[in-house]
Amino acid sequence: MRSLYISELMPEEELKNLIESHGCGLELITFSISENLDHFPDTLVRVGEMLKRLGDPPVSVHGPFLDLNPMTFDSKIRQATMDRFNEAYESACILNAGKIIFHSGMIPAVYFLEGWAERTADFFSEFMEGKTGIEVCMENVLDREFQPLEETVRLVGHPDFGLCLDIGHAHCYSPHSVLEWACALAPFVRHIHVHDNDGIWDHHLGLGAGTIPLKELFEVLDEKCPDPSLTIECSSTEAAEQSFRFLEMCDHKVKR
Image (cartoon, rainbow, N blue to C red):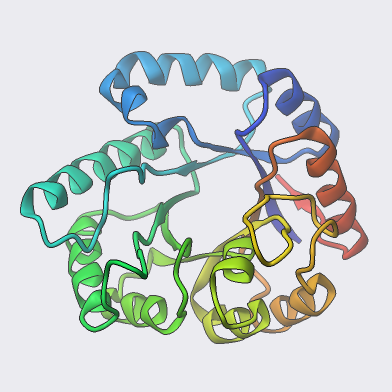
């Protein structure tokens, strides 16, 4: 039994119907947008009112990522990243979120792998100081290799710091199969973003509409990584419903 969320990628009424139909939680993307963080008090009020209309579902928070990078070599960008991440973490605390997800920031054509894990771990070690009670999950996006993510978690060594495995990103951005990703990172995975694609483009399709070997993948996850929560990251009700059906078929039922 895994905790299950739907991403805030659809109109509110569609989210309400999905949450009521499936008893799932909501992964907020509101606090990933800098303009919303610029107006933090007003944004909190607006989100609180929305959550009440949605029936006060459990929440996770997706942190900001545009123009930010935890491993940056620029001290001012590093400070801006730290400030924005802390603002999003504050929102997670206020909203009693169980998890907050941040992108790794790896851009393969720009950054060398050598030293990447050390710099990223330095950032997250500082970020995690004094923080407890909310799991902080670093998500693979454009990452081609999984070893640096594993190394970062080991170097940070904080009990509330782990990984968010995005199966769609692993499938279309890495030369390694998503099964290899799952096997290698299973001990460190706290949260999983689920959606499908054709292995070429990050379409965020419903589960089963692409080419991810889902049956084999969930067998691996069940065996090696049975506890992480899941977020369905689809932008249409049809794709989300398809994903709910797939998860129910695999006996990945929702718990509140």
